[in-house]
Image (tube, rainbow, N blue to C red; front, side, top):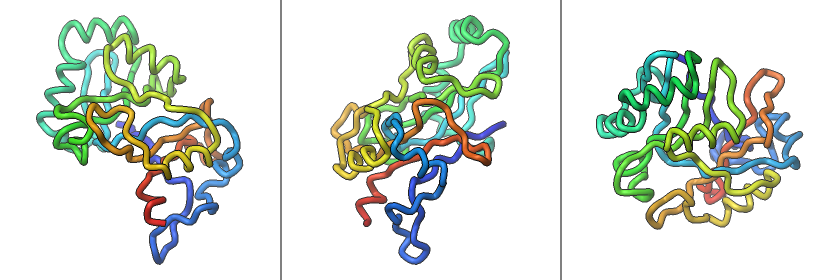
Length: 212
């Protein structure tokens, strides 16, 4: 089963100090696009979850096929996506297509998720249908029809504007409690791949800049 692509940091790291080196880009395509308009969403500190429908039934996976999903999170996923009513909704939306909903399981007992909320939930950030990632508008539309949370776009701007925002150590937008934001995920307004066929998507973590 296909895993979600690893989201890389923007800059290289010093091999001795392990700190990022601002201005030294890991990927030349990202450097070329740095002054274009990117969309920034909150990076959620949780556990990667794939909700997979093979055209007939729904299955749940972590980042890898062997990753174990905590029982309390699995119960929540079954509540959100299993059962006859949900199956009818999936069939109405997707027919017999193969669909993967990519998101984060987050909340109490998951990473530092107790700062987000007292319970656990699933928040969506990407959808792939028959091997093709959907545009943002379609992701939002499907999330609303499934009645599930989705990671909102906070603002648009250049990569430097995203970096400057994270350096301010803002509060989490999705948290139901008073919690700091871990960082941002940035992607161009339209799907772009580099010369190796990798999606252009990066993360900007406050911790990386705090240590500089």
